Image: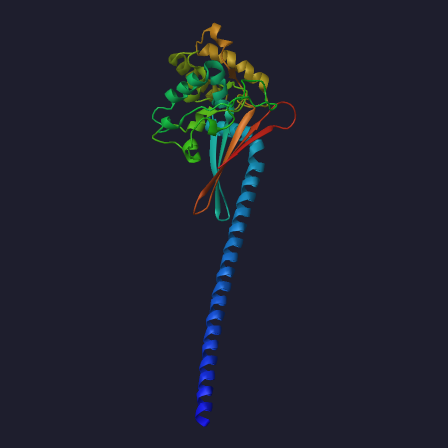
Length: 313
């Protein structure tokens, strides 16, 4: 009887030990799971905080800069004594770095104007010829919309192209705005916004060639650039290039073309302007791991608030 009692006692003690061990394993597992969940929630909270800070940083930069693009470019022209179609700067906000690229969209060749003048295939060939050496020749493919955008934009060509995705085939945004192989960035010379006219007081050589060939020869374009640079250097502190004095800017085109010895018969056929009503702001937000790209274009219509176009990568 005693022997059986001791045997049952040892069995119960072994059973209690096993249950205790099982409970310890279960509690350890639960503690590990709780720790992992707490760590995950902390990481998610930190990520959400970082995303919120970045979104507010982008919104703040856009609110502070977009409406002042023209004034920023004019200020740079006055400081540098030359035409300035694009200006870049970097702002550090907390752990994030924001690169801002302010540009005059009417200082660029308008893709929709080229399609209107030459047709889709010829416009594509025109762009390809200008982008030789950029490394993006295989990525250029115009995909115009079947119907033009009927939003209330200023008078100009039909809006068959309304974003870089209809010009470039799966190209990363950094390839669109950064120089490669010594060539200028594609989005520095091309646009699909604005009324189709070229701001002759700011346009660069490639933009002029895209917009004014074949109406002008390469020699005439070179003379036009040289004449523009001389006039801008002499008159940079005047209202040239400023939207504040449109009449003065329009009056500047005639003397500029005359100084460049452009035939009078060609002048009225050239899509030129002496001011701009369309500006863009690229915002590149970066942390130590990656970058986020956004593009906002502000287009004045003369009918109240400007029209905004946005592209986000």
